[in-house]
Length: 130
Image (cartoon, rainbow, N blue to C red; front, side, top):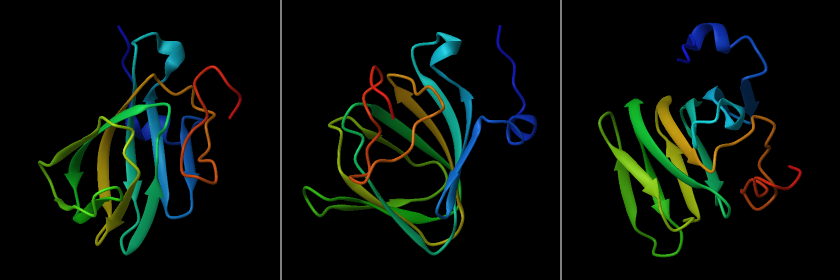
């Protein structure tokens, strides 16, 4: 059984931050669960473009408000508590946070915890260096 506390994990190397967001990775690849699980906080009044070419991601909004735009179709969806989205086609997207967003995220394959977003908004494949 794995039990972790978000507040304790936040002060370890499980916390990864970049411009205007932070992600606390509660489950990582070395936990051998087949996915990673993160609590990600996005600063209000911010915009982020990502494209996870080598990972699938599902996201559940715990709190806050914003939107996600599918950059292939231009379709925009409202993000608020209770809304889930899944990037099942490695969708290039822009996430816009109107207020602070707190999101519960799962990645498959799981991240190792050392990934950083590359210039194109993706993570390197799981078997490659970040």
